[in-house]
Image (cartoon, rainbow, N blue to C red; front, side):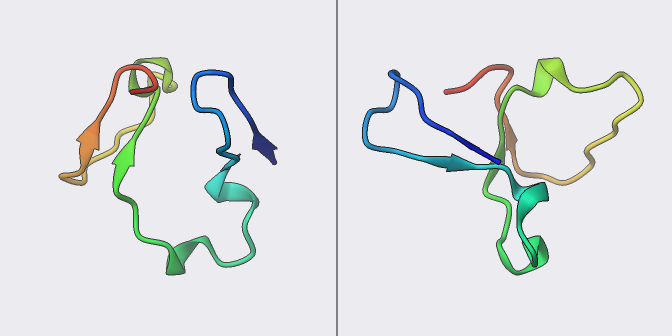
Length: 53
């Protein structure tokens, strides 16, 4: 549902798929792109980070 990291103290990160209306939150970038499933195609033009920036 959410996670905190020592790499970004004071931040709480939420997984979009856990929100009731994720479609109202625009995607600014994708993280951990290299860990995606092989069949997952992301075809938008947003920045894709191989790992967490």
